[in-house]
Amino acid sequence: METSLAITTQERPQRAVARREAADPLASILAGQLSEHTRRAYRHDVSHLLLFLQEGPVPEWEELSREAKHARLARAFAEPDALRLLLAVTRADLIAFRTHLKEVGLSTLATNRRLAGVGSFLRELQLQGYRPDNPAERLRTLRTSGDYSSTRGLTVEQARALLAAPAGDALTDLRDRALLALMLRNGLRAAEVVGLRIGDLGEDQGFRVATIHGKGGKLRQAKLAGATWDALQAWCNAAGRWVQGPEVPLFVAVRKVGCGVDGVWAVADQPLTTRSLARILQERAQGALPAEVVAHLHPHGLRHAFATLALEAGASLRRVQYAMGHSDPRTTERYDRARENLADNAADYVARVLGES
Image (cartoon, rainbow, N blue to C red; front, side, top):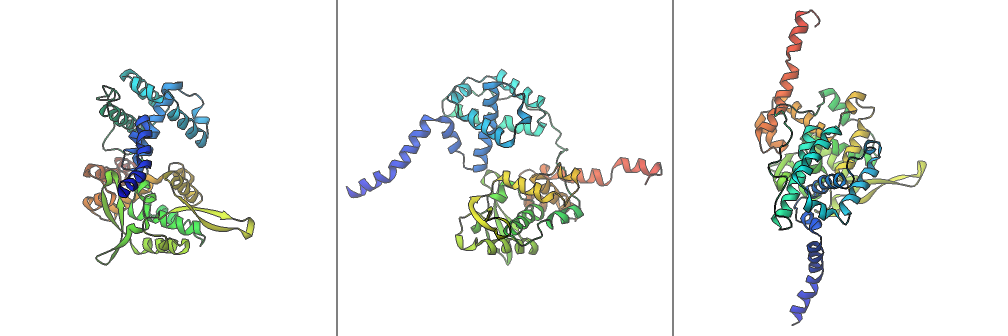
């Protein structure tokens, strides 16, 4: 009887959560996703659709601050009629939403990704019996070129300049040197970097490695070259990360305590997010890289740079594919084709004929 009572007491919070999720299908679907990155992406995509269904195009959207945009999206998802709108949304609504995304200037790739996120969410509503169909099924996405990527890479000199940008010994410098090293020297996705835990760092066959939790829960190993390992070790030592246990985030926020010359940097509790990672990259790139490069730089750009620099140095497509966690080798081949097209371009031949180079 005592054992039964204890089990019942322990199960009460879990049952309460289950009841809340059953009453809120949207929260239930999000909770059912294994990846935190997927949960954020689903919520973001569906919130954009809900805002469109609730208000139509928002004329002042581009003038809003990032915080104001996130607040509007959060309110749209939390509206009492959010579920009703998703249960009533039609194929025509989704086509209008697709047209809206094109008209506001969202890239073809980003538009297709947003539609895919919405479609996956609606499919969950169908599978769980909340609606009889999925209006996103067989909805045509925008045509893309499999050989083209709009992401821009970096030259060797630019990569070196960016790696050297956090030049001091403050906690922020030590952390950012390690972050940039993982993105540029290992080609990790932003979500993979912020998702690292202390226990993911280790050794295999005498090499320093990190266990990377990739898309779809796939695991792979990233070899940590000497400079990368040194940067990680310097950050972990200074921030006291080693003694926190294997499950704590590798990278966390850093805040300044005190004012002026008396202020000191201290480690905060909250882990970094992909958004904060993008902000750090922009801040470090300022002054280290030309303004026209900074304007187009984002975390995926460092991943692109890793691929093109590795291929330029002679790494095989297969090795680069594994390092980047690509399931399809054609994804990796895009980087190689882009590199070859720019390194040996028809325009160069015309310039030589005209005596211009």
